[in-house]
Image 1 (cartoon, rainbow, N blue to C red):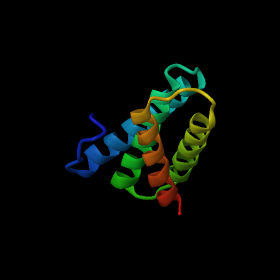
Image 2: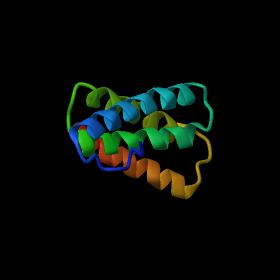
Image 3: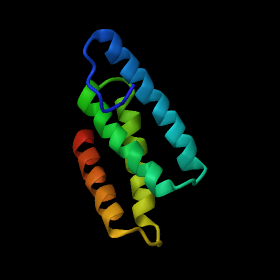
Image 4: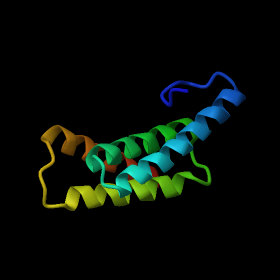
Length: 102
């Protein structure tokens, strides 16, 4: 199921939520293995924002938000080149996640 899709009933909503939760585990693995870390951090952050927009607050959200913010802080504080567009998108995600955390 496409995580950007809208669920039309309770069963689809449950499947969507489970799919998103599985995607977080996969992305955490990729980030920890340093495989295209900027991209995977960006996707993790975007998925966290989408998760919040679709499911509001639940027992998982705070851990996704904190993990996203930690990853973004780590990436953005590194002394390595990040293309300007990617840097802007990472910062935009960071700002949205900080607002969600508040």
